[in-house]
Amino acid sequence: MKRILPIALAITLLCGLAACTGESPATSSMSTASSISVSSGISAASGSPASSQPTALLVPSEAEGTGSSGEGSGSNILIAYLPDGDGGVERAASLLQETLGGDQLKIGDDTSGDFSSYEFVLLGFETENSALPEEVQSFLSANDLGARTIYPFVTGEGNGADSVFSAISQLAPGALLGNSALLFPPDAGEEEITGWADSLSLSGTAYVPESGDGNTVATATVTPHEQQVLYLWEEGNAPAVTEYTENNGGYSDDPDFRPYLTSFPVPEGTKVKGAVLICPGGAFQFRSDQPEGVDVAEALSALGYQSFVVDYRLRPYTQQEGALDLARAVRFVRAHAEEYGIDEKDIAVMGFSAGGILSGEMLLNFDGQINGTALDEGYQPDRLDEISADAAACGMIYSFYGRLSVGTTDVGLLRSGNLPPTFYCYGTRDPFYEQFLANADAAEEAGVSVERLQLDGMPHGFGARGDWIPTYDSWLAQIFNGN
Image 1 (spheres, helix red, strand yellow):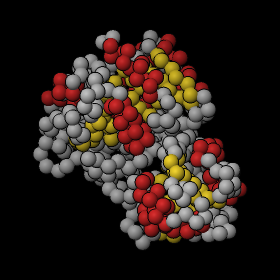
Image 2 (cartoon, rainbow, N blue to C red):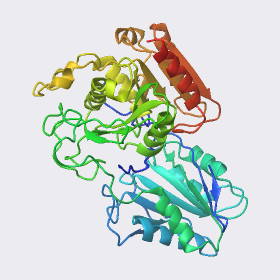
Image 3 (cartoon, one colour):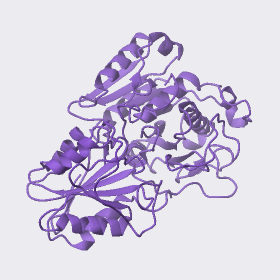
Image 4 (cartoon, rainbow, N blue to C red):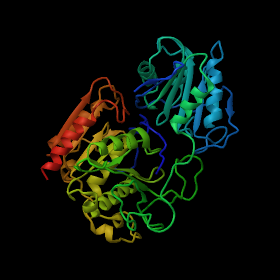
C-alpha cells in the first residue's frame, strides 16, 4: 500500500492559485492523558515574497534529508520556533528534529529568507489564548510561505487549534495549514511529542508503483477490491515538450519521476455509484496528496465512488503535460469500467486549486479522442488512446477554469469546450473568492450547468474539511443517475 506524504499546499498571489500555476491559457481533535491536543487544521492562500537570507541561525539535522534540497541539511522540513522562558518550545523543536530530521531555525528579529526549498514548516511558540507573539507575526509577514504546509506546535494556556490556524492563515495566506496541530503543556512527555511528529508522516519515502512487469495502466491486471498504484505511461513514452534532465534543487520531483495513480476502492458491501479522479493542488510546485488527495478519496470511496488520486507532473513540466496525465487516468478507468462496477459514462474529474486548473485544462483541450500526439509528435499512441477521456462532471474545489492566478471570463472559450456540469466550492475568506464567482458566472453564461457551494469564513486550501463532501455527493449522484 502506498504511503503518501501529507502535503497540503496552496497558491501564491504572484505565481498563481495554490492550484493555479501553469503556463497554458486554458487553464478532530483528540487529547492524550498528558493534555497534549492534536487537532485538525485549516489552510489558506498566498503571501508576499522575501529574497534576503535568514539572519537567524539555521541548524541542520544530522539525519538524512527527506526531500528537495533546502538551506542546511537538504531536507524538505523546516522547524522554526520562538524560544520561551521555560525552554519547552526549544526542547520540543529538538525532539521534532531528532524524529523527523529537517533544519531548525530560531526565530529572532528580522528573521526573513528564502524558504522555497521547504515543503513543510513546523512552527513553534508559547502563547495564551491563541494570540500569535509579535516575533511570530513578523516572521510570517516577512516570508513567503506560499505552497508550504504549516504545522503549529504551541504551548501555553487557553489555546485552541482552530484559533491558532486562523491567526496564522491571516498572516501567511499563501501557506496551507496542515491537518494537525500540537498543543502541549511545558511538562509534556518525550514520547507524546515524538508520537505527534511520527503521526505527520513527513519523513520517509513515498511508495510508488512496484518495479517489474504489469505496473502501468496499460499492462496491469486490475484488482478493483484492492488498492493499486500504477504508472500512467510506459517508460520512455510519456508525451512531453519539456526537456528535464537535472534537478538543481528547485523542483519537487527529480527527472526520473513518472506520473501515477492510486486507487481507493469502494468498501465491500457499499453500492458503487461511479468513479472520481482527484487532482490535489500545490501551485504546480508540490502535490498536496494527503488532505486534498487521500483524505478526499477515502471519504468518497466510503460513499460509493471508486476513487483515484492522480499524481501528475509538476514544474518544470507544463500544465498541458500534466493535463495529459489526467486524461490518461480517465482512459484507464473507462477501459476498466466493468471491472470497477461502473457505467463507463459515470466518471468525474475534480481538483483542488492547481488540481482544478489542471482538470479544466484537460476538459478544454485534451478530452475525447485527443491524445499525446497533439502535444508531442514523437509520442507513440497505444490501445488506451482509443478510449475517450471525456468526463461527466467536474469538481472545482477553490479553483476555476483558467490559468495562473486568473480565472477566465471568456464565455466563448468556455462554450467551445463543451464542458460538463461543474461543481464550485469555495470559502469567503479565499483571496480568489471574487474570481470564483466571476468564473462560475461565465461558465453559466456559456451554457455549463453550474452548482455552487459557498463556505462562509473558510479560507483557501480546506481540503476535506468544511462538510462540503455530502453536498458534492448528492450533486454527483444526481448527475450519474441522469446519464
